[in-house]
Length: 211
Length: 93
Image (cartoon, rainbow over all chains, first blue to last red; front, side, top):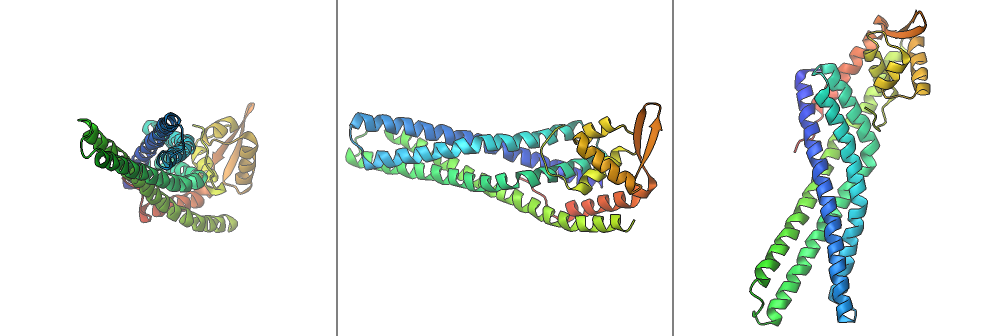
């Protein structure tokens, strides 16, 4: 195992650590936004006294985001905790090729365990991203309706604040979709290695059988 | 370090054999290779049977040490993994 391979693995571990951390952030934001929408829309519906289609749909959207966040956070923390352990061990280990290989083997074992969870993470972060984008669309429709309804005579900061809110949720939606794509890329890389590892096991088995 | 993760038997054998280049007692092997005692005994029994590990009895201790016979397995494992990581593109942000 060469130093070059060890260095490449070190970079890969750092990248995945960053991705796992980013994932937790978006999971938490999805939950927070979901709850915030549910509370605001529930209060609006209670104040209105009747069930209105728009706020009800928005409330449902918020509830979906909260549910997604509730699943996403513990799974993200689990994945993050595991990769953090490996990273800590890598930081304290000597830089020998053997130590690098030992950690790569651990990483492969970890991926075998996490594979299903990461597959669901790809889906869930994609759903989270889509929900944020939908929230942006809802907010945009609401803002346009408000402006049109008042013939442009809105409160002074309504439009800029509204646009800022839409920009934030759109940005978060896009970022969550990027997290989903990055997890897919990570999965593809490790799936290829696992497939190759199965073939290697057959060769190792042959070597041991011959003795 | 204790962590989850499904290692193949060959990955465990490799870890044990590398660690046992210096004579080790079972407790050390269990801790280092993150195994439970029963599984460790099974693997040690297998590797000893294959001649990959030698048993050294010292006063009240039993130690295990990797033999020359394990060299081919270790070399093959390492070169296969080198190829695995070099030829399969990794993940980078």
